[in-house]
Image (cartoon, rainbow, N blue to C red; front, side, top):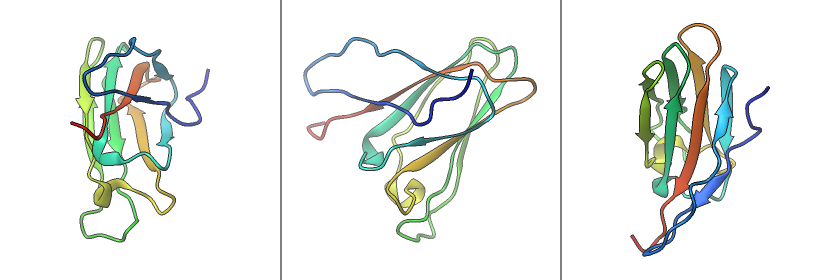
Length: 125
C-alpha cells in the first residue's frame, strides 16, 4: 500500500450534517500534502492509530508569507487506540508558497497504521 497523494478535505456545513467520510490510511512513514485553496484556519485532522506503536504527526511550518511564526506542530498519537483531533491551523504558521501545507507521519518503530480524515469548518461558524 501507499499513502494518499494528498488528503481529501471534507467540508462541513453550518446547521447541517454529512455522512462520516471514508478514512485515508497512512501506512508508510512520509509526508502528505493538504491541497492549496483550502483555508487552513478552518481545517482540522481526525487521527486514529491502530498500530502497535506510537505515531508522530507533524504539521510542517510554512513559508508564505515568510513569517517569524513559521514552525512545526508535532503531536504524538498513542499506540493501538490513540485518537486525536489536530487543528485548526494558523495560515501564517503552516501555509507554503503554493497555498498548500504538509503533514508528516513517522512511526516510533515499524510501519504506521493511521486512519485520517480532514474536515473544513464553514465560514458561518
